[in-house]
Length: 321
Image (cartoon, rainbow, N blue to C red):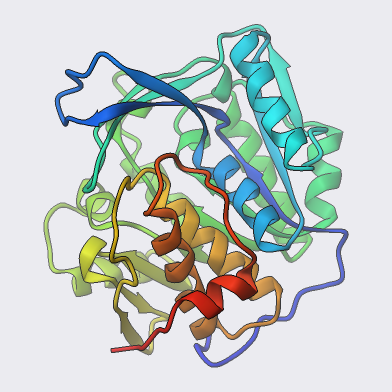
């Protein structure tokens, strides 16, 4: 049970968090346009788990990325960005496929993505990944690596190892039918994965894609019934609802200036994980997650220049409702 006023106890490991999955290019439009009618896009570092690894490093904890990129200039750009951030790239594999990319409209609401996938789903389970898992406290992944083979097999092995080594497992259930193999309905598989993780953070859109329309309270209950131990459902401008199965808490958003929503959820995960690792209670970590997300929303792109977690805490005054 994840009690909101408790701190989590972690074993003394060399690395804090290992993120597994997509490392890709976000091509974000210069203009706000939901129909992708703009003629100008800029290249940004992207991929939800990789964004989290970059962010938590800036917030003061250690991270590693396990992912695969193409043997091309875009792949080199992504690897170099990790190196500049002083993140070891020993678990980043270079494969003979084009680096994956997402075309994203700059948005103050929910961005409309177009997916171009190749290299990201060719990540193999290696001794480097196995050792990284053993030496980490937390492992995090999203729907991307479970949506295609062969990387789906890698995640299966990761989950087995995480259970043996008592890692905290976070899962972003960002199901979208467009990222799955044509003709495959991945909803049942996503639901099965939820039974094997500790923490999930769906958005309202994620929940609706998995379960259909319903109240947010019922959606949270469905994730709990599948086996998640802590459910954090983000509600955009309406904040979030969080439950451990016994208690339900609501949180207001701290965002007052929204420039681009790309990576807002990743920023939340980053603040939340960094705060847990640094010894904050779950309730405090949730608040710091929302504060980091609010800071990111002021800038374009998923990875921005974040201040330290301590500075974030001083920038935002929060209150639970």
